Structure formats: structure tokens, C-alpha cells
Image 1 (tube, rainbow, N blue to C red):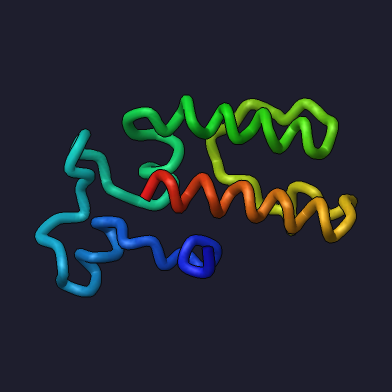
Image 2: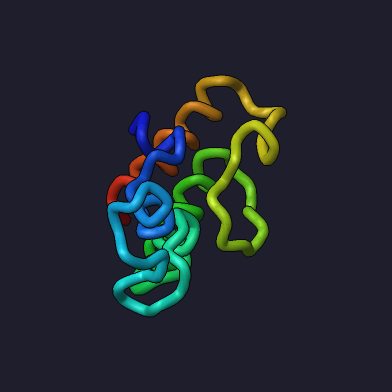
Length: 100
């Protein structure tokens, strides 16, 4: 979870920066392999992300706007209690961990 929250996910973009990969491109689709791409845009990512968004919406009892970015509790939900913010971070971290 620490690696996910602190953006230490081993994407090809990151691995190429430290010379452990030959390319920054995704091996599945050829687009630059960023954390956002891997989690929300490639393969079954959009389906999994929409499911996670639904869980977050149920947790905070609102309809989330349609977007594909990962939720940032500090900017998107500053009005929520710290426990709910922590739950959202855990849900996102679990999603990222699963996708990576």
C-alpha cells in the first residue's frame, strides 16, 4: 500500500527512467505506461475503476462525477471525516495494487 500511495509502482515509464526497461510503452497496448494508464485506461482497468468508484460513492453517499483519474482525498473530499478519507485511500490503494 505504501508503494501505491507514494507512486512507487513499477510502470515501464518509471523503469525506463532508471534504465531497467527498454521502453516507456505499455506491453499490452503501446501507450506510455503511467500509473494512471495502467490503473484506469488499459485492458480491464476501466471496468475495475468504475466498480471501485461505485464503492467510493456508496461510502460517501454521493454520485461521483465521471472521470477516469484516481481520487485524491486531499483535493476531492476535504469535507469528509478523516476515517472516510482513509477508507477512500485504502480502496484506491487496493485498486492500484490489484492492477499492478
